[in-house]
Image 1 (cartoon, rainbow, N blue to C red):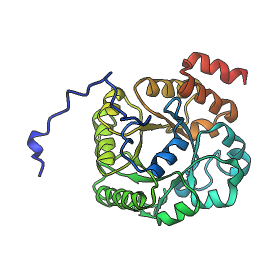
Image 2: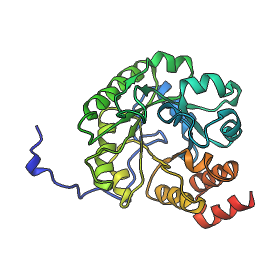
Image 3: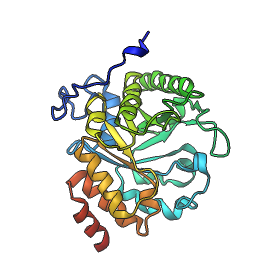
Length: 288
């Protein structure tokens, strides 16, 4: 067992030294099965190694919050500009056109909402994800939450077991624990725990010293957009994350709650895949 009196902060992160990919373009994926690599290659652009995921799974805990009241009107027109869609299975089946031909990262845990205590979730059967041709499944992990940490880590472990059996990658989504500081030490711990338990992708939040979070996580990290920011600030967030080593963004509210969502997602895409500066990307947003 870990000696709590002798947990030392990491020092040798090797920042600036890329992790070897072993012949496959994506970090930490070289030893996966062909099917896993194929699905990951749909989510991440093999040329840039990055992705712009459009998240609209908010309704599974928040209901019809602003921007996702009508998925058919607000989200469907944006699909063509995203690399990957992150949503729940009900919305996918009822509102997302199968002809969109976009990979899906399927929200695969549910059980509580904002009206109760969050994170008391169970995992859906991976076979349903296979029926939906999902390219990955996403499971939330609440590191630092005394009530739900163990069960959410167990959910991730179960999802990884089932995903391995069917060749479906798993994205561990780090919820913010109640008793942990929102800093690189916390997100580094949470991201590493997800990877150690088998996650193929980690979704977490950007913070100062984010390059350390990326360096100590052996699989790709995509950042969550979080709450709605002014457009320029959201583009700066994406830029700083990519420059710190993130493999992409998974944005929702900063896209669909924008005054001009289609322009915003295209500007974010240019930051992620083209390395556009926040200033230039904001100009692109205004032009569009």
